[in-house]
Image (cartoon, rainbow, N blue to C red):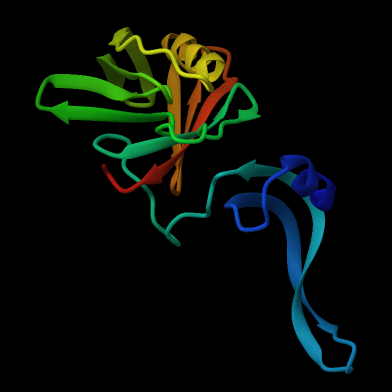
Length: 177
């Protein structure tokens, strides 16, 4: 299942790809009879093109972090050639909370409210350029943000959920740009 998911991702072998599995490391013999540590996969959970594991044992902060959009409504998001990557930055300076980012073609800005694990986006405004690729993803992304009700950071990954607990979007932390 893991190999099939990797093949279905359709990426070049040098592209980033995060694979999540359940398994264990066992000492198994190589062809020469010597044992070597080997990952034995019991269950493949999923693959996420364009994502990495991030910094080991580090947890990213929600606010004032550059978040690269990697999945939207259950589908991988990859930046179109020669375009910026879809992203999100939640800025906070005192009582002023501003969401900024890119849909891939256009930049956007708007307000957000954060209270514990509750997150809501206000009205978003943005530029109105047309791009050859990525406009469907950008439109879906901008239509999805107002549906967000909760968030969770897992290591270097941000997940946004609707009121029913369905994951809407997944991001990976990157250096603030």
